Length: 146
Ligand code: SF4
Image (cartoon, rainbow, N blue to C red; front, side, top):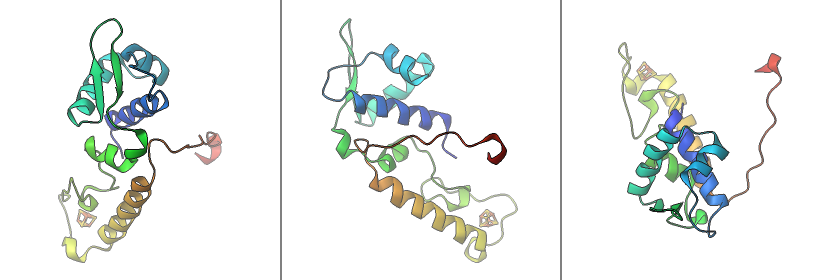
């Protein structure tokens, strides 16, 4: 699963994409709008700035904005920058690979082959969707089907 930090980073970047070209967005506005703890958001925005995805300006009229147009940032790029694994199990991760303790031989394990395929298809989808693309929220699942 994606880490909490990666999920917050995605929401912060969506907010910056919504405000792209309109000047700096204050940290408090992102935190408030996206319900992200301000301290955690500071750390996340610093990481995104170091990755070259965000720029910032200090001062009363300062804030954060996307360093590159949202059309040039895919969700795949963003998640990789935050080092979130797309795989359901660590051994099927291409960038954060890890074996479990009681592993079968990886080359003989059907579960790994299956979940590697799931990982690769997930990456294909995420690499094809850009921060500028409209995404329609989905209503919550009914409690009995969750
Ligand atoms: S047993 Fe299979 S699924 Fe588990 S870590 Fe080893 S290769 Fe991966």
